[in-house]
Length: 545
Image 1 (cartoon, rainbow, N blue to C red):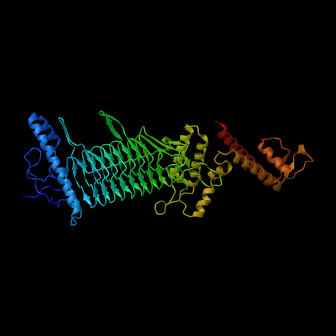
Image 2 (cartoon, helix red, strand yellow):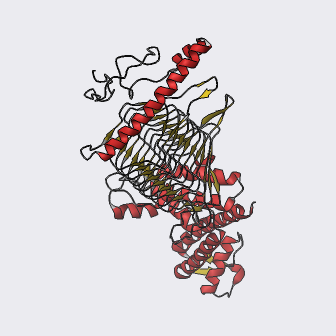
Image 3 (cartoon, rainbow, N blue to C red):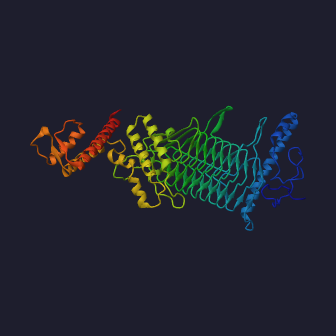
């Protein structure tokens, strides 16, 4: 009797050690080729062929199927028992096995086990006989490595409460039905690279203690990571959450649920596509978060509360794309260390968020972290002033639509700050760059009225100019006019001369003496008039609503 001829797709050197399994039903299993473990189980085509047979033949075939499946289960369990008991067996080899159904609840695997390229076949429901429909790994414990590379689950796969003490590998695994990892514990790094979840995927209350990889994973149905914990980071880069599910063959919007999830370490959603609803309500991100170039095709919510505020460290939402009808909402979250360049902030909803509050001599309650964050050495040599200014313009429009004019003015200041600093962009010398930032029209506008937003600052500047020109008149000289013969000309009178300028008096009681004094008068007329205009502009901006 020769050995099974089964070959693995990813390992041509693999040779099955088991003997060929012989059976009488050649139309149901390939005769003289495979062992009982690798014998292909009933396909959809075979199901139809079985149904089309006469009732007597059909019942006989169904009984034979049930007997072979029970024999398969017994042999698998015996194989596992022998492997665990044999000290010479280093690992349990179930590669490429074709499982009709399996119940391994509460099983403990003390040795490495490999299900590489195994196939868990969807079982038919024929006549009154109902075959088991689930792959049950509930509360299974894997003490070492568990390899599910390329496994295909046509049945529901239940790993609820399972414990993976080794490195579980689900690389390129396919879950045709529901994948349930409810409350599962992953003590080491878990790999779900390029997995396909075509049914619901439930990782609620799961614990990932050493990180996990969901790179390029595809989630077609509803996904839940609610109340799960990622202790050492997670990588969902280039994953796709299609959000597509159906009810009685009617497509409905699905959900990627990350609510009340705890993320510790760096979390990556770079180039991730959320095509359905994405819910991050009451989640806590303890490490750096990266949503760079992510796509939100529907509603997406980041909701915090007064205690968690969602984000604890720097988070990156640069180049985020929003679908035509998408809605990205930040509610009660801390955006004090959030990067937002190249994201259309006019379309984003901000509700009671905490913005960065810079420590500057002019107090600002709201600013973008992109303006103040330290430069990264070797990656960014110059701040992206123009891009940050564009974000500020978008925020001004966003908040003005909501009639939140105080916030809009803070972001207007940010836009003008970027314009001021842009005048010195490209200057290598730090000293010259700082000097150029303050020697330009924008800097003067800032000093005189904080870019037209502060009537208090504008009035203070007006008073200082008034006093300054009074001293200038006193030093350069002035005299009483013909209508004010015998008048004094001290510092108080110089101040009255300055007041006559800002009150637009044509007939003054004092006049300049000499060209220096006349020059001061011309400058006073120009500068004091301009400052009054700035004061009126600031008052209008403040009280026009």
